[in-house]
Length: 434
Image (cartoon, rainbow, N blue to C red; front, side, top):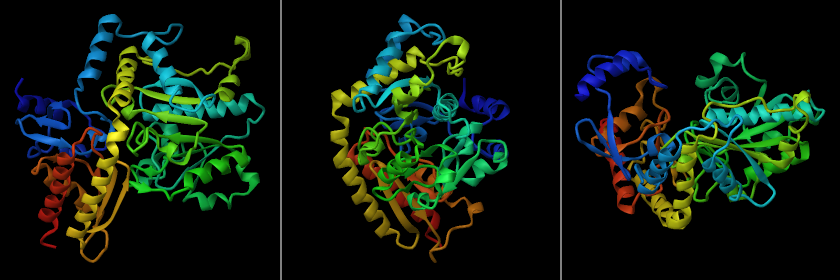
């Protein structure tokens, strides 16, 4: 079908996330339609090629259409396409649960519950934590603690934990009770009488994504783990974005030798190929749900595609690539090169780059006016710069006026140089007259 006809259908029927559809459906707007991808390169409806500078919204790990993952998906589809986890099981789900547990120290995170995406992984952790309290004599521990500027998804429970007002405020009175703090220092001011009402703290470890790639101070995560242990509060690590090598280690928590009580994974779990999420927890939590059926201690929660065998097969292939390809080892010099290139980028645009933050292979670049003041948000300066970067062969997406560079781990040194050069050229084109 001709691309223009498909675009007409898109405007007539699709509703895109985080998108003002009046602008999208305007007659003069031609949406970018991605037709194919290979490795780090994407191709649009006109045959133009782009480097994938944000891993297709932070999901892709080893490049698009990686042959090992594609082969695993193809093989599994020839065996069985779907198996219900309610009353049945399947080999890929069993093997993946075992593989995820083995990424952590023995007898720590031992149980895996599969869902569909990051929001549902968080919802799962929240419900497990609340039901655990009900079944262990602490039914009044219903509160959650989260952090300013945090983001944990858009389903109602997960959105309750969000510290970004535009995502949370419309529904703030409808969600679960949540207290927000700015950081670890604020925890010490919480009286014991108040923390006794908390069931869990939820955090994006090391770096907050939707906040504009805001990094936490070194040691903060370890301090939070100690505080949770002192107060008997669960620690939920939202590694939906940071998991699977993004920070230079398999998981962000490893940087401070922290093991959470709940670990939430999605996005890169399948290498960015299929929807799949996982919530890992401890044997202590799992044991609280055991009992006779008539005691109603069962975790009455699940999804139609829980433990989806094709998604689990893709995830197993993703983990195999890490092991066989020494991905984390090969990533370290690229992380160092990214730091060098970003330092040079900031020096090239001192009037308009206020700050550059990097955590592993993740970077946020803050754009400001020449006087150092933020641009009015209505001007969508970050969006305009990212649109300009397309003309230089780079696709990425900002968080307001923070430009995000989070490429697949397979990016080569030359591709990294090209990506930063595209950002530099786009900044120059959009902001040079100012």
